[in-house]
Image (tube, rainbow, N blue to C red):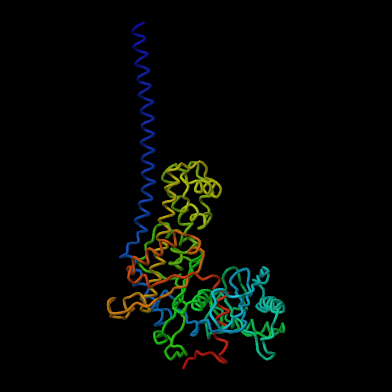
Length: 508
């Protein structure tokens, strides 16, 4: 009996050891898997690193590319397109002006009444209209006849029009957010359609002329006084409110920038004359690229999977269209390294399922248990019961990707300021030191939901501006938010160009 008891005790001990070995083994394997997941995060942090030294390299590269793009067409990734806008609104404009904003499946018509003195709030009326799908692929005449009819209906709903003499044509600013070769402040030819439009007979034709012909057919006495894109409109609105505004940046779903350049610096258009000595240049900065930009494996994969590989490289690093999908790709990699999301949801493999507003909500979740992160993972990605430590890891991924984007955007802005001598260094060709010159107050107009709606992005951008410029210079650089510059700015440009019987810009 004693032998049986001893044997039983030994058996129990052996079984206990076996169970303990299994448990310890599982813990060791779990820790190894977790270390691999943490290793993915550390690798991401290293690849996305944006030291001040690296950001200043990006600043220099942006300024150099701007210079090259102004020297010759095709000389830079930056197109540096001439807008022929040489006179920006300053608050002295007076009268009633209109804007047409066409940039997608809807268009807007706006009317603004200017009193001749700068006003913090501009009195205006807006009308929105969806474009029928068949008109997006039909003929140019059908599309512009539809737009002209809507314009006419909007005009006919005016109250007091006594200020308009019978022989005076109403004037319109036309925001046309498609690739255009600008010919003058009020004319340009369509290079290609995007955003679902495909009207073949329109490519290569003069855009304002097509609209004006349609307005004539509809009996509407109106002319296109300015043909602009949305970033130029934002600059116009910013300059109306504050004449120290020298550049405008849009950071939303996409991104672009424009700025006011000296005419004599636009080498590729020698003989260009303007009444002001300057001209707004549309950079199309989404296509900027430099070897100094920190790029990860996830960025490379995203670019390869995109409809436009090797194009819009800067935009894919900083704009709202792409940030969410970079985060998604990191989470996919983490799920491959471990069973932290076991079972893996099929939603996680869907491109762009994780939109940037969702990563902003996770990033800025300040609840103790990160309940918003839990909700988004459950409802949007169908990943239930994610442990708190994993949720914290995902918030950190959002932080790394967003911080990189904001700091690179800040470097781009300083690149513009460096090119025009507003960064305290004297400009790209300047030799003066910071102590030799007095820094002028410099305003950059800013528009776009990524900046206005994402607090952490905005904070990181401002932090980087101060780090790059230094506190003494940064205090003179002001970022001012504009609202609806694409439409309001176009109306203001119609006003600032309406006093000229012919364009003030000419080529000799």
